[in-house]
Length: 293
Length: 253
Image 1 (cartoon, one colour):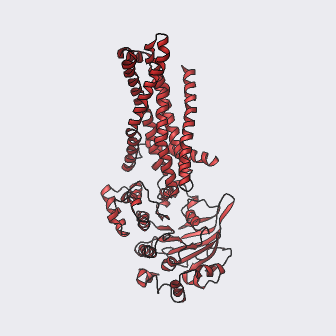
Image 2 (cartoon, chains in turn cyan, yellow; image 1 turned 45 degrees about the horizontal axis):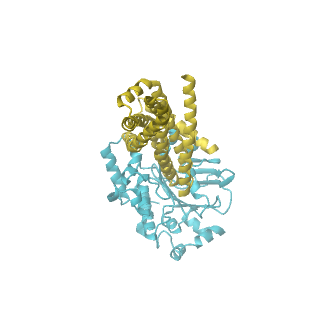
Image 3 (cartoon, chains in turn cyan, orange; image 1 turned 60 degrees about the vertical axis):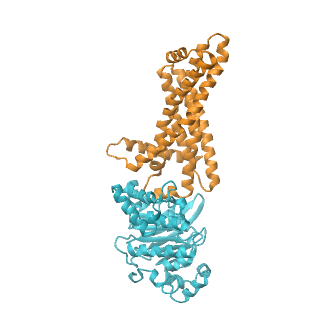
């Protein structure tokens, strides 16, 4: 664990968390990112454990979405490097980079479904692009993925005909189309009502329990954090204040973190005093892999 | 400005890559990519036929009327056919067709790509390992490259026919004389120079429209602004290209 506004040297987390089969670990080494003169992220060093859910937490404008976009190689790293299973994405030749991208599934903030295509075709897109499956098989896979997120009956619907929560679930189905090794979710619960948010958290937990994936969630939703996180990275003003497990986060006495967590709803405040994983939301049955560690 | 040039060069580079892939036998275009290309061909081509036909017919009639006013005075009414045919095929046919497509297709390209850019759909394509240039720009570029000359040829035909029918019915010029005069005066090189122009216009419209779309940053206002800029810049570049090709044609005649 590291708590407080300090520079983080080395790979403190190496080997600390056992990875699940095929799920890669993501290592950030002194990552700094900026736009023009403005530095958005400074010297971020941490390791997101394999096969776990890591939540990147922070207030608005702290750089957490930029960190996600950097992990996706959509924003270049100014200094430092990001290693996925030891491979530096930025240093790869274009073909290898494209191939690595196929191992990433991404849920964007509003789903980012292609508005001109119905749901089924949105999910089919990566399959058509990257596989040689025939159309019947693709439809079968698409139905399976949509069933996974409870949207199979809406296969012919266009994104504009779906609610915000449904669009996010559809985005999750598309992100899962190629059975990714890494699933990245940008603010999956933002703009959703508490019940839909809880359903989405539950879905993420089920995906983690079912598929060997490393999941990275960017969020400022504390309920979500306590529902799904195995590992937490807290950012403030582009700097990493904390990285460690949920239990370690609760013990952290950094003023910003204490204040940030103090904004939790009263129900979650009660959970903080007890066992966040066992009481309140999430309910015990909401963590299907709770025993798998 | 620098960013726009960077995006434009990126698009050109991507399109060259798409072209080389299309010409490679080992690369097989996926069925959904063919469907996308057909969709664009149909939307740009078939769906534009009515408006191109109406504008071309009106232009043919206007040219016949304007030239008749002067030529009647010197007793050379039969030369109406020459003026209508030559003006349409070498100048007004390609230019007016491209103007219609800049407003109709170019604006739609910009609005579509800008909206996709703002709603992270282009980022989604990138992270799915789908090249946005090949998925979004290449079908538009190929469709415009084919369809602008085809529509121009159609517009030339409709304009000449309309001018002929009008001359025969309103100006008292024999239809037979009109069409014989047109056929004897127009040369294949005239038609070709118009088609080369129209292909260049099609490429310019697509590149400008898609570049503006890719430059969109945030908000609906930016989509509107980029769309307006795309149409204005397309028209400006088309006029410059027209000047260039007309001068080249004059020098090489």
